[in-house]
Length: 147
Picture (cartoon, rainbow, N blue to C red):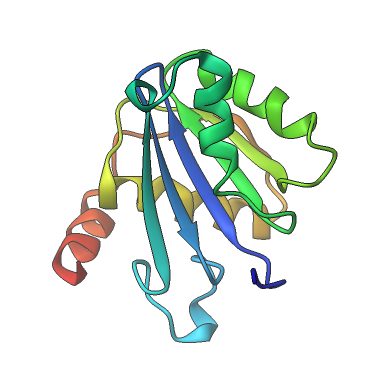
């Protein structure tokens, strides 16, 4: 049975694959004692596993829960279509709280903009349609040594 605790989910999506990072706790909440990388899971969905674009989106949606706060990232139009698919679920698959243009991101590199988004959200700054910087070298090195 799935929990009712809100999760933060970052989805980097393009035409060939989607990478999902699912945080069981708020990755920006430093008071919890968690460091980025603790209590999170990673899922990979590839378009090759599906017969159609609709099945591809459905495969991504299967990882989402109603209470999820979702950040969509990616280089092209697939993040916009996935947002549309999520909205059609009427809250059954969470809600999109951020949408950002991003170049290819992978693994721990996806944690950086995700944490930055949740910090922006907590500060009341919009996370929609903001460009993601290439990287924050100090934070990236810290995360890399922890993984």
